[in-house]
Image (cartoon, rainbow over the protein chains, first blue to last red):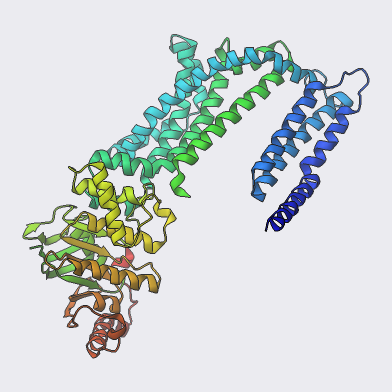
Length: 318
Length: 271
């Protein structure tokens, strides 16, 4: 019995090994390593780049050993391959050969070194940005969801409000920025206001639609149980509208991030958007690229977190 | 006494008359099947009984007092969408129990809910979401919920219409068993169906409804003693006679319309 099992395990291991060696991720990984270890005249060995490559490969291998399903393995491999590909192209175009503008496209190795040394400053800026983002976004959720539920549930309120939402909803929130800065006492208040406006509409409109789209049969079921208004709202209407609310909340978050960066580009003196804008003014494109990479990491983490939350809230749909 | 009476009940959508002059009384503890082609307004009639709508004219009464809205004195099972998909099956039953018996503790409610789920043959679905159950299991759970609130009246709108034949037969037997179980406090049941054999198997009386506009074409007593055995039923001459009679009644107005050269369409289908 044991022999059979271990034989099976061997076969499985062998097939994993074969898949690993032949996968695009491994091919690009080897190419990248070859490129990095092949000395470029006048350049030191790219230690940070090698460390990053090793880290990505390690994460990929760990995922490969944890994820059993073939689909997950293939997806993780493709993502790793794309990252390796970008690093390889970046190194080839800027360091091996100089194919692009030297100033606008800095070399990867100094950018990575700078990323590490700038990290404490950027994290400090991130805290300032997150205070704005979280305040504006939470105020938007806290007002848009209850108002959306009310407007969706009460036909009369909907009819009264609908003409206004039709006019106000599509206004690009960026146009409010100069006015908000002029009107409100501080930059912080103005940014929070603009983020709030930007996130409010998608959440509000999707909440209203979510209530409208609750299946009529479910509402009938709720009515024949003579549920109180409170129970109806919290146990039927809110969860019934939740899929649509989540869609709106995701959209709202994207808007909030865009407006946060836009507001910081215009009036801030710290924060992640300000960082990019500030060093672009000084033509320090190394730091601009560092800032962009940092922002993309932050956005990825935030999106990952909200996706997990959404999956939890909508577990019943699968 | 849980007598339901309909007096001259008419229901229309704008100029479209869906139900016309319905008069009928269901006696306490009686099992009544509303039988009719799709679009004859039988589901509309059930919605009026559930209090989900008001008749255009006429009166519906439960024990003499008018039905003005939904109430826990009437349990309702729909063909689908009876359970809330975001709550576990147990929570679905507990929600109803909380409405019917608000005084009881949480532990008691959970225990009662589990007991009713076991009664319909679902012993291990308490923590499962309705989406994880089969259609038949969902209808079992919906029946458990309707029985848990212990309402004297049960309204069922084609509850087995979307199920396969075997599951449907099992659930018909379950329903009859639950209904007959408590012979002193037997529920008054209104059961909407378009299936002639289902109606005969279940009902004390079958109300046949016709099209254009929806109205009662006849009321037929089912003179077959209970418990009715499915396998014996088909060879029972009383069964075959009644079945032929009901089918003839159902086809009467379709044939009539075909004779007149008109398209056979009901008012209900246009809604």
